[in-house]
Length: 110
Image (cartoon, rainbow, N blue to C red):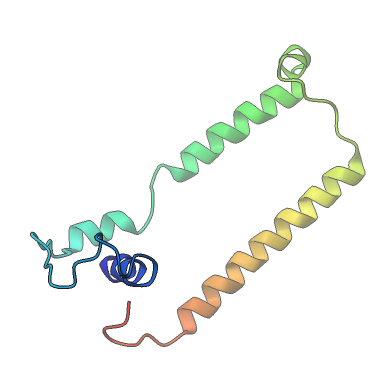
């Protein structure tokens, strides 16, 4: 992250008073295993997704809630198109994950 910020500074802010090449960070915080473990995933994400899906299902099925939110009934063709688009997005993300997992890492590269 620090490298990306410095690259931005040197490409976008070169020649201004905002870039000082002789500066050094005041503090350096090493990444320990606890910090890295917390960055791996959110354990509450599935519960949050379930809650949002439950509320959306209630809004779509209970007529007064549907009218309050301004939702209309959706026919079969748009639902099929939305499901196909969702499937395509999921497959694309899975393909990116698969390629990323098989891409060799260069030591020291950011």
